[in-house]
Every structure is written in structure tokens, then in C-alpha cells.
Image 1 (cartoon, rainbow over the protein chains, first blue to last red):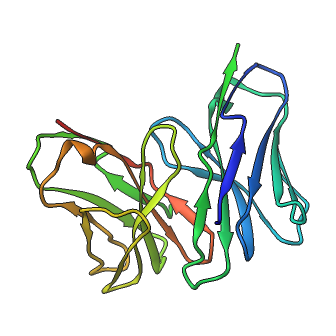
Image 2 (image 1 turned 30 degrees about the vertical axis):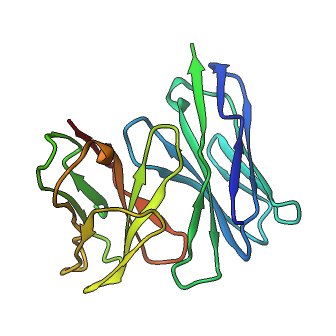
Length: 114
Length: 111
């Protein structure tokens, strides 16, 4: 069964600290993996996208890694800011159909305290 | 500026009313989608469209219906709203596999 599991479910950190969010997936055949940031009451916004051959992708203070062999990804946030408080969703796309079906994790709810 | 727009952002409506959630995109994307998301839960696909006059049901059974008469417009309709329809509804569009752009969502509350 194709699944995407994220951990931790929630995380509280102090402003300026770093943190790492985890994503494990069983989706096959794999097409790409995206990390989205979703502010409360808003739609998800894409942070990074990685294909099978990519190991690392950065977007400012966000760095995503992908290990396609172990089917694991992580999102590292450096020097956190209050505006980083949001839900971070891991989304994996398969290439087994023309729809390019997306499998969503439940997200990690990150809270950054001053 | 190319984007995807959803209206209304918030809607509180009584049981039994008919409602239409609007979604429009200016990017010329052929593929459009509707997702339903409850708090703290993952997004579930309820409808999708490959292009004009093409609509399909998604993974999550929904009593809503959609239409795609124009490329840029993908409205979702509930003929008779019920409290169980209370949720956030997200519209998205894409031109490539996995390359989604999401709207800001409509938070629907049925009382």
C-alpha cells in the first residue's frame, strides 16, 4: 500500500534554532517528492521538489534531502523564524498513471516560539 | 501575475442549502483538482479534470459535483449541504506530473 508517514507529528522550537522533519514513504513507482509549507487556513505552497536522482535541494533556509534507496526524506530548517510556524507536508508522486497521483503525509505542525 | 484563486475564503451556511465553491486559474493549466482536508489530516482527492469537458471522481467519495466548461474555471457544487460537509476545500492545478499549484482554500462550515 502506497503511504507517506511523517514525524514528528508536532514540534516546538525556539526562534533561531534549527530543526529536521522526517518523511518515510512506500510509494512505488516513485516519480518525485515535494515538501510543502501550509500556513493555517491557507493552501500548501511548494518549498522543494526532488526526483529520483537528486539527493539534496535547498531553498533559502530550507534544505531537503532524499534517499531513494531507503525511501526517506528530511527537511532541515536553519535559523528558524516565527514565520516558519506552519504545517510542513511531504508529498510523493508516482509515475504509474497519467494522473501522476499524489500521496500526502499528514504533516508536521511546527511552532516557533520567540 | 499567474495564480489560482478560490472564493469564498470562508462560508457558513445552513443545512440543505445549495452552494458552489469557485476556483479559477490564470496559468492555462489543463489539469485541475479538488481536495478535501480536515484539521490535522492529509489532503484527499475528491475530483479532478484533465481538460475541458473532462471530470473524474477522486479517491474520497464525495456528494459534490464539478464541471469544467472553460480551461480556467473548475467550480464545485453541493446540492444540499450537510454538517458532514464541514471541511476545508482546496483547489489545485498543474501542467506537469506532481507540479501542483494550490489555491488558498475555502473553509466551509455547515450548521
